[in-house]
View 1: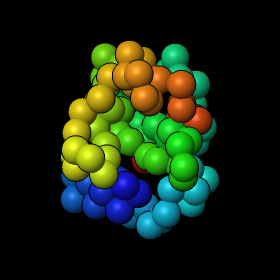
View 2 (view 1 turned 135 degrees about the vertical axis):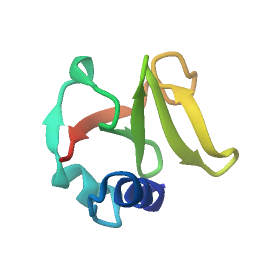
View 3 (view 1 turned 180 degrees about the vertical axis):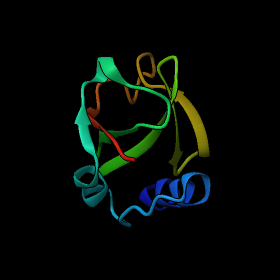
View 4 (view 1 turned 90 degrees about the vertical axis):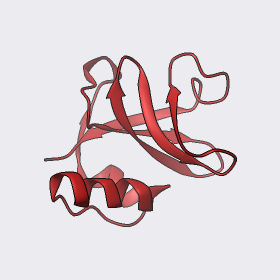
Length: 91
């Protein structure tokens, strides 16, 4: 999942991110959930820390084992809504 975020940031913005989610979380400036903008990285805590890219309107694009690359509404998803762990902005 972190590799997907790393790849997208490198290809779309020319930004090099660390390979692992915990390092990606430390690489950006922490922001409040209420201040999210498209392109911010949102982290969810399940069995491990899972990063996703915020795309607006409460939606994130991320990788899941069951669906591959998918879009999820982080505020209404029965699985992800209670797993929000934080957000960062990288530039």
